[in-house]
Length: 226
Image (tube, rainbow, N blue to C red; front, side, top):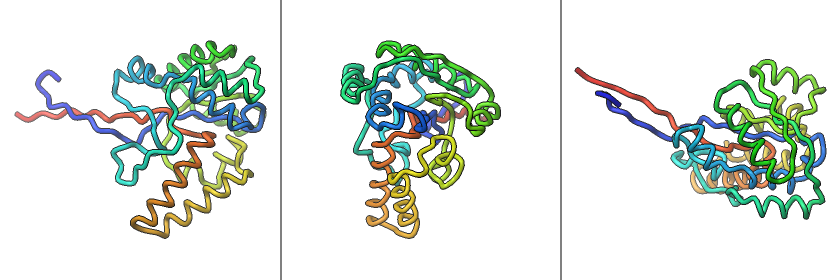
């Protein structure tokens, strides 16, 4: 800021969480939701992003014209997380948090490890390059529980492709089929009708939280003139 004009805007870049739904307890929506409530995203934003990010309240950031708050918004609540795990019959144990070598994602994984320790989980953090991380997951032999990494587009993450068919293992679910149907319908609509359909998409994705943004990153630029 010494001599430059600094601007910051809310961007589409995210750091997301993804669950391996091919293994228990992450095939249980309540267990996934409990983890979402256990993560202190506000602390992540302050400590890791120097405040230059916002906790997700929908799939897309608040500044986007099609933004609508999701029916389920995850805020830090350890007691609620513990209660949900107990009600779901989940006994915390060992789990593996994978992160890519994006510095912020790696640091988020370390804080997630600490947050989940408060619930009784013994989390191990494994960090690797994006290529190596996804190669291991796509190979089908990686026994990870949670992934934290950078990502972006709705039709990429929730397309009928490797993300839901292989990486999350959720592609055969009725909920995924419903999301795809609604997304296809929304692309052919406009105005209030389209907004109503997108709201259903955002609500379904947030409620199931199979692959969901934890934070939306702000973009910072600096400019100067003679």
